Amino acid sequence: MQRSNTYVIIFSLVLSIILGGLLSLASAGLKPAQMKAEEFAHKRQILRAVLDTDMLDDIVSVYDNQISSFVVDAQGQIIETDEKGNKIIAEDIDIGKEFKKDPGERFYPIYTYRTQENPDDIEAYIFAAYGNGLWNNIWGFIALETDMNTISGVVFDHVGETAGLGARITEKELQARYKGKKMFDANGNLESVNMLKGENNRPESLDEHHVNGISGATLTANGVNKMIIEYINYYQPFIAKYKKENAGVASL
Image 1 (cartoon, rainbow, N blue to C red):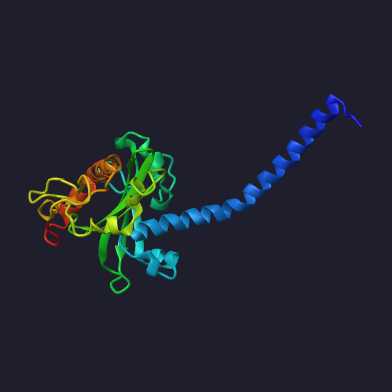
Image 2: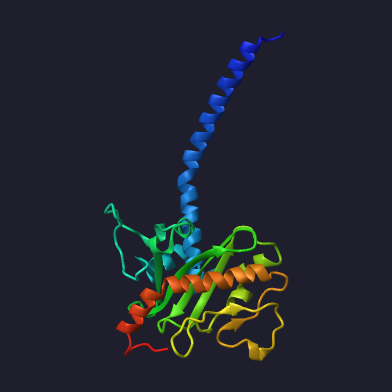
């Protein structure tokens, strides 16, 4: 039996409303689980800058017991509330959204790592970073020892770098190249650590401020280089303040 156009339109509208409602309910029901998964992934990335998370049985427990956090402004001052009086929590800072702001207006999260054996002593400070790769955004975490110079570890991630090329910034082997490298030169000037072009550079060129790059992914490597130096520079007011307060304890 042939249906009128009116019937078809009404039927389609009702069906769309019902399906839309079901999808909304499903989305609302899945949202807590999705948020929990995002929180887990975020904590895992931060921990990866200082630990091999593949060896951990309970990442959330380790994070909660060994990581503390706070937020600083562009002047390196610790801030606890925003202009509306809302509490600022480092883990809630979306570094990607902050990246879209002027650097002077951003919130900068900092995470401190303590070992299980020495819970009263900070072993490393972990700084967030964000930038642009070849195709899309890249980000990472850079852990510095308490001398605020020696790299304890790094972790990088990306949205859409080329598989087998730029996407290799997520590999443990590549990230391990940064361990022990220095962010500042002998005079305390920010020099950062740069990936060189290619992966077969002469050993003498791989000094305290250089690591092997990624064959076929020079633009991604350049993006990582720029991201690191820019964000450590943004954190410099805090780092300088820290070094001044701990001049007799830690040194370059």
